[in-house]
Image (spheres, helix red, strand yellow):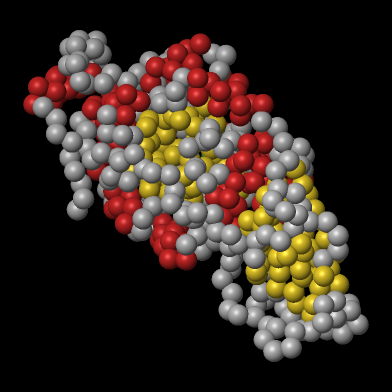
Length: 475
Ligand code: XIL
């Protein structure tokens, strides 16, 4: 094992034991002064092992002085609770709204806190226009959304939940959704798109009920991450939401789950921790979660899903560290004590190492026609029409390839990019080249187009888009 316990002096341990005893007895919480190196806040204590301790923040509570007082004192990372979700950031298609997210981001950065971005692609909390979308239009919209939002927050968000909750509750397979119906490769396309937009952010897959190592859902996500790492899909971390309650309790194999993901070469983050319950039982579970994270070097940090019980999305379960009045609960004391006990050091993780793949191949395709030695003359048998969605510095394009009066069994469309522009990502086509004349050939599942029918592919690029009608060649 690579666990490297951080040495801690005996004096600190003694002091902490006294502190804990005092807190547990319900006496004055700080009857014993902490020693010089025992941190007195969650964030400072987590920082001693290179980690963060964060909370979900709601923009409309930033005017609540009790709330902000605890936030600024205790936490060194934040996750916008709802303000970076798709319905919040793109309420109308291609009209982006960052006002509420920016309130949280600006507050956090001014306080020296990290920001986790949550979330770029999710079946839930989609705006109405996206809910009614399917197919290649939705695929393009997803790519455009990820590109625009991740580009906007480049340099401010240190980790993105790129894809949230894509797995089914049982069975270990994918959850049905409009995104899933665009093709099984939607998750890897989302990650490649996020990497292209923000090469320095850590990119996470985030889900609930993937905490217990024995659950099929955990195994399903594990297999996906293993596959992504094997094929070079840019994924850096797995977010364990960790909403614990009687139906989904903390299990002692939680550490095994973290270690197993870490062994695949990704970091883990506890992203939405809340533990329903009260008193010492709840306090013990919080301490267990902290100890597990601190035992795993690649566990970067912990985020609780709200500050006071009254702030929780599950308020009736009193699952957080502060009561409704902002007082520290027993769970707070046990959490701080477990953080102060130390553990492995989380190395300052270098920025992601996988450069943006240009152009990516998703899904990987076997060589496709045309295979003949004499390429068909350009323009034979198919036509291509093209629509583009451009913004300053980038664009996404959708190309419709239509067969004429005869069916085609393979096709390629060629577009010429202006100088300085580049293709960063393509879907439903295999791109050759990324600058100048770029050729997009069919992939295995869309080469055949019946007479009079059409298929669509898309690509994303930086700079300004190509103009003019794409040349189409059929085989
Ligand atoms: C929750 C928020 O806390 C609520 O305010 C909102 O009404 C619904 O979403 N998993 C996630 C989070 O990834 O985004 C969810 O947050 C909780 C479950």
